[in-house]
Image (cartoon, rainbow, N blue to C red; front, side, top):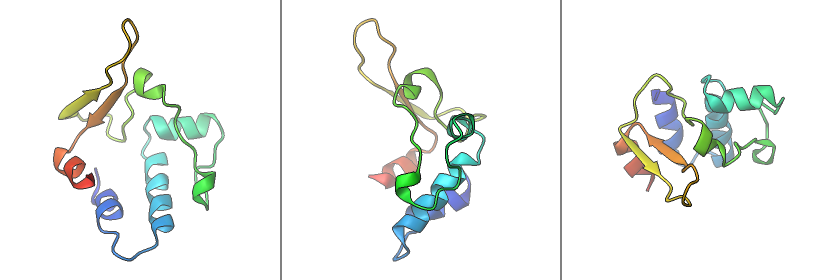
Length: 104
């Protein structure tokens, strides 16, 4: 992922959380992944001015789509849900385990 995303996520300092969250939202909408297509196809706000105006992907997309802003890369780790017998499991793709660990 670009350094801009890393800075938005990890170098928050005392900056305004809402401004950073909206910047990250705009970043994800404009990367051309499934989230950007979802926003465009459903005519949702691509540049909301408040967090309450932000769109969210349906949770089922984690079962049916690769939810990523890096479609050309291969994830280093894939977490899957335990699921129910016979049903498709959801997937959480991790491209950078170091970033992932920094999040928690």
